[in-house]
Image (tube, rainbow, N blue to C red):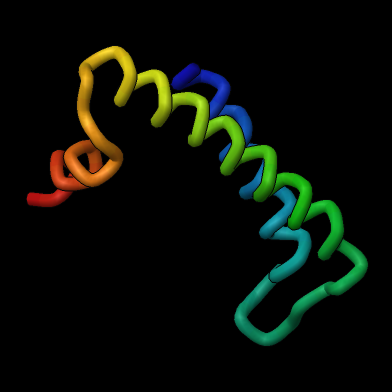
Length: 69
């Protein structure tokens, strides 16, 4: 599941770089691909998050608090 999130994030990064090639341009021809890649990444993250919460019996809020310093 972690590998799936990393792979989806890498694909999203490619589409984001195509959509926003630099600080001064946005190439809207890549918008749909970026949105699809983002949705795929979010779905993979959700699967991982659900798995962690179910496995350890914690809430999303508790999981999120573990990420904070």
